[in-house]
Image 1 (cartoon, rainbow, N blue to C red):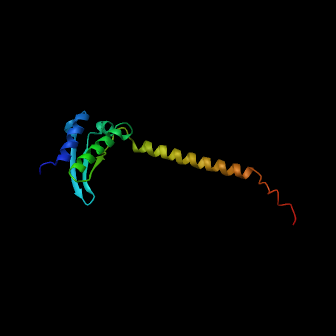
Image 2: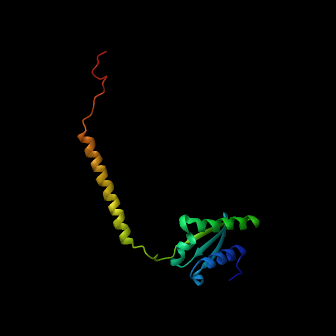
Image 3: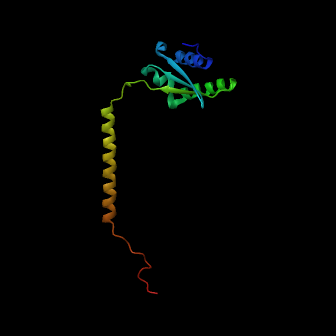
Length: 131
């Protein structure tokens, strides 16, 4: 494996200081026509720490990378890769929630349609006038 670039080492250093399982931190550096992309993988228990409240920690890391990139005349982006088999999520539960939302929307539309049918249409006040 080739030596790691400064930007990749920087991301690893910062992230390892934040997480509870630094041995699980992995980065992969890719270069394309848009610039440099660093993909970050951490343990699923540390995802919340890396993202932070309202994404503020991830945004701060990305800002620091932008500064580092500007210093080296490069555009650097960070992609946080979600670990597979994410803890706490159960697909069947999510599907049930989606079904409930769809059912509520159907019920709401039906109620609106019934209300529209029950209300008598008012004629325009000028319709009775003859010209």
